[in-house]
Length: 160
Image (cartoon, rainbow, N blue to C red; front, top):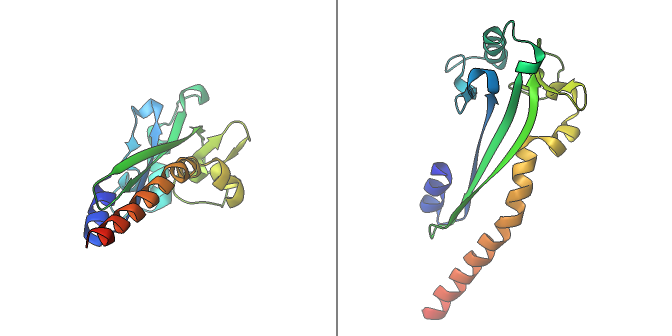
């Protein structure tokens, strides 16, 4: 929300911002909002997921639940704001697999498909991911922001 508000106020336009993270049940929600900095500020994707795998070493599959979460905020320059959230539940694999995607995708296992996020095609990922789910929700509320923005412009012109 902070990013969307700042951009909307700076530009005078409707702004959208998002943030995503991986929440691991056995790690009490870590890495969460620190997903991109989990192994340090300049760590690679592989260093981040290797750190996570190390912390989960020895945990059985039934204790490896996790969820990718994406929050998307929209804000108008007038200060109206809303947030939507999308989630994709899965498990943390024992080892990385696959070459698609980025970040934690090689270790995020989808039980219903028997594959990690990095093993499914980008097209398939774009149908089931946390971002895709959040964007579907955003598509439902964005039109009202656009309509209100048009109405504000029209009212300003009419009062001049």
